[in-house]
Image (cartoon, rainbow, N blue to C red; front, side, top):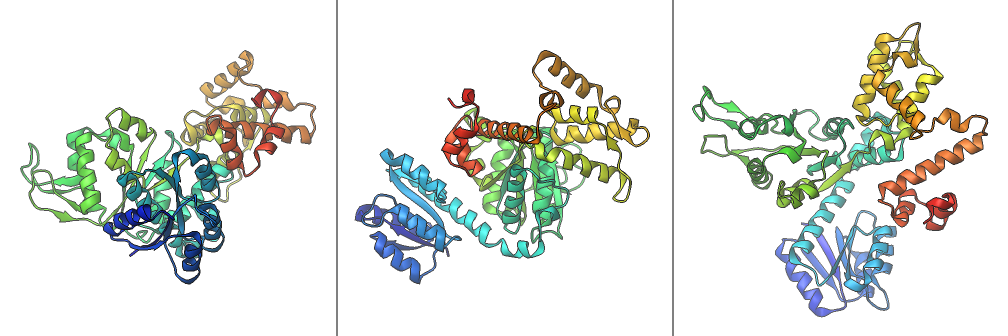
Length: 458
C-alpha cells in the first residue's frame, strides 16, 4: 500500500486530505508543520509527499529541497493558493511532480496523486532494466544523438519495466511503433506476444471484432468463433496506433477493458480475463479531440499515465547523419562498404524539412541506393521532389543554403550560428516562452538572452 506524507499547518485542510486519501486506500501520515515533516522523513519511508507551500518557519519549498536531495525516489505535490501559482511553477522547476491550487477539486487531487505514484513507481522499478542496458545505444534501432531523442530513450528505460499504460505522441513517420516495440522488448513481457493494430485503418464494426473477437453466428459471415487481439496478446503487449481515430463506441469498451481486465466477444455473453499491457500512439493532440467531443476524457487519463513525445526529424538535426548511416547499414549489411555522399547531395539532405520524418528519409536513401553509381550518392540519385523543394526554397529565399551561409567563415562562426538555430528551435518548441526554453536547455534566462540575436530578444 503506498504511503503518503501530507503536510499542512491548517488543521481543516490536513483532515480533509487525510479523509480523501484514506478513502482511496492509501496509508496516510499527516504532519501539521514542516518541522514535523522533516522528523518523519528522517525516520520513515514514503512514496509521496503532498505539502502546502506557505508554512512557517519551514515552508514547502524547503521541504521540496530536502525531498529532492535526500529522497529522489519520492514524489512531491505542492499545494498552493491561487495567488502564488508562480511560486508553485518554480517548485516544479526544482523537482516537484505537480501542483494543485486551493481550493482543490476532489477528482484533481485523486488523479494527480495516482499519476505521481505511478510515475515514481516506474522510476523505482527501473533498476532491473539498467542492469541489462549498459548504454542507450543498446535500444535497438533507435538513433539518439539529439537531446530530444535521448529523453525518449531515458523514458523507455524508466517505463519499460513497469505495467503502466503509455501514450506515445509523434507526427506520422517519427517511429511510434519502434518506440512501442522497444518498450515491449525491454519489459518483463519481452518473451510474450507483441500485437499492433492501426485504428485509423479499420471501420468501427470491424475494429470491435478485431479487438474483442466474436462468437459463431454473431453476424453474417461469422462461421466460427474467433479470438480478438486482446486475447491473442494475453500476457504480452498490444499497441494501438492512431488511437485518436478509434470510434467513441469502441473507446467506451476499451475503457472497460482497462478498468476490469475483462473482455466479451462480439455476440457473446461470457467474460474472459485478459492480462496485457496497452501502449497507444497518436499523431493528434487528444486534448483537442476531447474538446471536439471525438475522444473520451476518462479514456485519455487512463491511457496517458505516462506520455512519451517523439520530436519530428526537422527538430533533431543531430540525428540526420547517424540515421543515414544506420539506414545504409541496415540496407547493405553490417560489413558492406557504404557509399559516399557528395557535398551537393549532403547539402540537400541537410536543408530539406522532412515533413514525412524518418519514414521519408528511409525512402529517400533507398531511392538513392537504387540509382547510385560507383559507390556515390549524388543529387541525381535523390528523389526529384526533395531536390526540387530545396532548390526552389533556396531560389525564393525561404531556405538559405548552409554551404553559402558558411562559405569563407571560421569554425567558430559555424558553431555560433548552429547554436543560435538550436536555441530558436527550442523557443519554438516552448511556444515562445523563453523562460521555459532556458529551463529546458539547462541555462539561465540571462544566458539565453545573451546568446540570442537582438531581433529575437523581444
